[in-house]
Structures are given as C-alpha cells and as structure tokens.
Length: 210
Ligand SMILES: [Zn+2]
Image 1: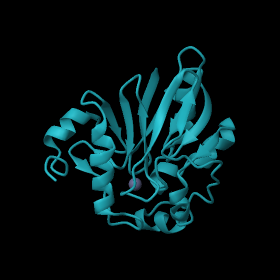
Image 2: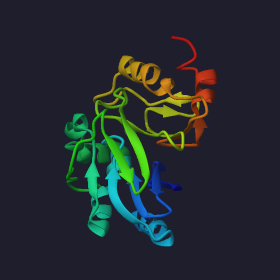
Image 3: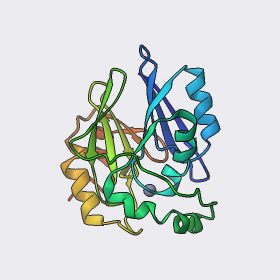
Image 4: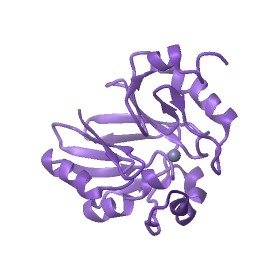
C-alpha cells in the first residue's frame, strides 16, 4: 500500500493519498486544499485516482474536491446525511475566514455497508455520526488502518458544537464502532498525529470511562 499523508490548507487537514503499488489505482481522502501538491504526489507515484472520498462536509476536508475531480475525473463520495452541511460551505468559509470554494457536487453517497476500493485495496465504510450527521471512517482491515476523519484524534475526539454535531452520538459511534477495532489498528485522524486504537482506548480522556 502506498499511503501519503499531506496536511492541507490553513487548518492542516490530513489528506490521505492511498494507492495500490501493482495496479497504480488510488483514492484520495479529504482533499481540503492544496490540490497542486496532491497532484504532484499522485504523479510522483504514477497513481490514477479512481475516487475521492470525503469523511464529512466541513470545508477544510472537502474544499478542494471539485478541483481534484476536474483534474482526475474521479467521482466524489460523501455520506448523504452531510448533504445539508455541504449547502453551507459559504457560511463555513466565513467561520474560518477562507474563500468559499463554490458548489461541490457529490457523485454518490457512501453508507455504513459500503466498501471503497483502489486496485486490490479495500476499505469498509463505517458511518460514525457525532462530529457531523454524515461523518464516516474508512477501515482497511488487511492493513489494520483507520482513516478517522474528525471523529477521533490522538488524545481527543471531534468537536460536537457545530451544526449537526452531537456529543451523545459521537460517544456511541466511538464506543460501538471505532473501539470495536483491534488495538493494533493504526489511526490517521483528520488533524494532527497518528495513533492506535489501543493507545486511545487506554489513555484518551473521552474514552477511558463511560
Ligand atoms: Zn470537521
């Protein structure tokens, strides 16, 4: 598995570029910004993007999706429960003082029983509402790797005070779905450094006791 993690934009959203070394097929997760840099990484590995996966419809995760689609022809996938939030990108841009990216068109919804693939690589989609209604995580079982979006961070969890956020729901998602994964699963959060499920189960103040 080729896996490059590139922090993009003013909020340094972790954009993941994941590719199959044999087929050179790839998926890009959360291309929030800096699409020229994303394209440079794709070129360096000679990868062809098959799909663009958005973990949730916050501007720092989705802002560059249309530019990447225009450059690659890949479909943009987002859980339908975040479509309403996607209509608020202009307002979101005002919150953080960013230029509005314009309208983002979604090609298909991703739900909790879906799988996304790139060549021989497969990820299970986990619907994990709480940070937003349509938040998803991507779990690669063969590689024991979780792309967590803004649901889980090293030592913290996603904020729930923005529209569509719910503290009880994010705790349910974390306890019932995310913490069901093996301890040695590597977690790549939407921002900041990587961690493991075991480490967070052990020491994350939001997760140790319920
Ligand atoms: Zn977010």
